Amino acid sequence: MIKSADWLVSGSSSLAKTFGIPSIIIGLTIVAFGTSAPEWIVTVFSSFSGFGNAAIGNVIGSNISNVALILGVAAIILPLSVDSKVISREIPFLILASLVMFLMVTRGFFSGEALLTLFRSDGLILIAFFSIFLYYLINEALRSGESFIEERRLKGEYADIAKNRKPLRAIGAFLIGVIGLALAGQLVVHGGVNLAGLLGISDAVVGLFAFSLGTSLPELVTTIKAVREKEPNLAIGNVVGSNVFNTLFVLGSAASITPIVYSSKLLFDVGLMFALSGILMFFSFTDRKISRVEGISLLVLYFLYLTFLFVRN
Image 1 (tube, rainbow, N blue to C red):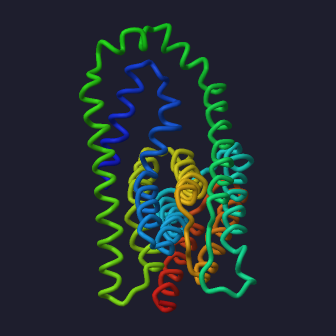
Image 2: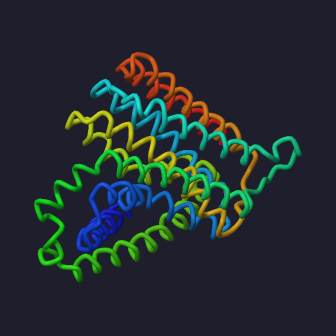
Image 3: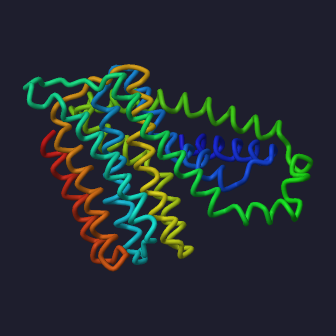
């Protein structure tokens, strides 16, 4: 699955550059989709297969893993300074997205029903929020990178780029990535759920732990690489962007395709996901960085959550 996502990203990027699309736009759209493609595939296939707990659990678990595990590990390696724009814009939008999802998922809690539903209308609302976020990102990128892009154009970087690329190879990589992700998604969902049945583990735990940890590997690799290259803003931006993408696009598109039925037991997990967004905001606001101590606390919180998860099961 991870290799297929790599092919999808590289093929799409090559095609986009062949037609002269600026790399800054590619990073905000194609690469962002590529790192969250595993979550999207697993969530959609889980929903289609009737495993609603695994579908929503994958999104919730991935978001929890991204903040508590990935940022925790990254901050232990190197304290992460946070850009003021991320604190004032991107993280508040993440909190808003998490709040919208929290309200949707907990909507039927007081009805006393064991099974709840995320409807197509909920999915369309999430997609609408994602469209606003994507529009904002692209506008910000164009404004901040306008001079850079113009400079590259004056140097002729985009003038003869089509001559230096092989579109057939890019198309092949793109198609292999799409087909690979589709096949891997089916294998992961059905294999994971069947294995859970043999081990006596619920599909909710599979989604919250196994699926989420596995599909978060691209974000983990990207974040650690960013930290090692001393790019803390890239590390935090990767996590924040991925969580927004998962919450609004991944879950929104899955629910738009087919309603998702899930257990009310997931309400605690979505509450923790929402709380972690607030904790991230608090840690970022204090001294505008995430220290090693805060990274350790995030990591401890993640392992406490895993312990609770398996005890509850």
